[in-house]
Length: 414
Image 1 (tube, rainbow, N blue to C red):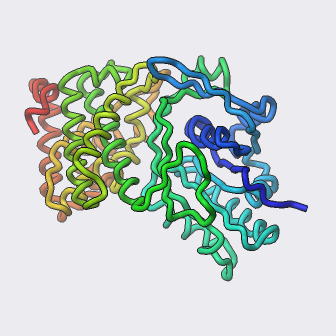
Image 2 (tube, one colour):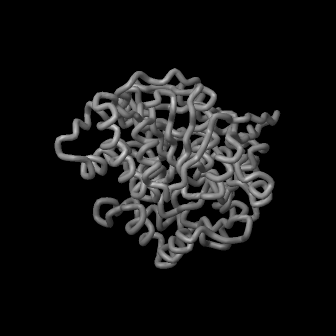
Image 3 (cartoon, one colour):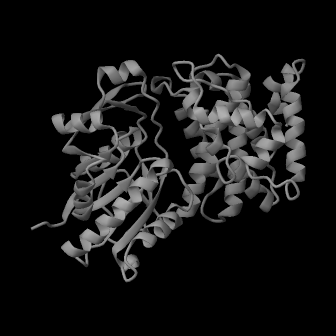
C-alpha cells in the first residue's frame, strides 16, 4: 500500500538551478530528492550513480557531493504521478516554457494523493523567476482538478525569490561530467511563509518572508535589473567582452550599474514602505556587485543578457521598473537608458550563435526603437508618449558613430 513519504521532495527540473540549489538544499537537509526531467542522459546517470557534484566557484573552490538522489524521465507519466502523490513536498524549476507540461501532471498527482491520504496537503515550491506565480498556478491547477477539490486546504503554493547565480556550462565541462554543475557560494532561498500548508521544512538556507511580493520585486528590480544593466551596457561598451566581470572592471560601467540599481531601490522603498531601509538595500546592492564580479564563476555577458523578448518584456526588470517609477512619480532615466542599451544587445554563445528569440528581437528593433517599446515592452503610444520620445533620443545618440563619448560616459549624460 502506498504512503506519503514526508522527507521526499519531487523536483521537476534537473537543470542548473534544480541541481545546484533546490536539490542541494534538500539533500543536505536529509531529504530524498527525486528529479523529473526531459533530459534522459541526465536522468539515467542520476539513477546509475545516486549522487552528483556541485562545484562552488569563488576565491576558494569547494566541491559538494550531493547524495540520496534519483530521477524519473518526463515520459514516464504514471511514475511521475505516483512520486508526486507520495511526496512530502514538490518543487518546480523548469522555466516558464516547461510549465504547461508539468502542471497537468501535478493535477493528476494531487488527485491520486487524495486517494492515499485525503487530509495531507502538498506544498509546491515554485522556483521560477515569475511574478504572481501563485496566482498562475492556482488558476491552471483549479481548471484541471475536480470541481469539489478542497484546493485551499490541500495545496500550498509557495512563491520564491531565486537569487543564486549559475553560469552556463561549457561543452568541455559537460563532456567531463554530465552531472556536475557550477554555482556561486550564495545559498539562500527566499520563500513565502504564508504559502505553506504543512510546517515549513527545517532546511538550512530556506528564508521564509511574510510580504513575499516585496521580496520577489526586490529580486526583479534590484538583482535582475542590475545584472541585465551590466550585461547590456558592458556589451555596448565593448562587444568583445565575454565575461560579466570584464565589464564591471570598467569604472564607468560599474558606476552606471550601481546608480541604476540605486534608482530602482528608491522606487522599491516607495512601493513597499517599511519593508526595506536604505541601509538594507545599499548593502544588498554592494553585495550583488561583488557577486557579479566573481571571476571564478565565469558568468558570461551572453547568459546574463540573452532572452531579450522576456527580459525587456512589459512587467520584467526594466520596463516593469520604469512603469512602477512613473506610477510613483519617481526618476527612471538610468533604467530607461539600460533598456535602450538592451535593444542593442547582440551577444553570442561559445559557438558564436545568438539565441533564436534574440534574432527575432533584432528584427523588431530593425523597425525602430518605438517598435520594441510598444510591441515587446508594452509602452502604449498614447499613455507613454514621453517615454517613447526619450528612448528614441537616447537611441539616436547611441547610434551616432561620432558620439562615442556619449556611450562610454553615459553616467554623466543621463
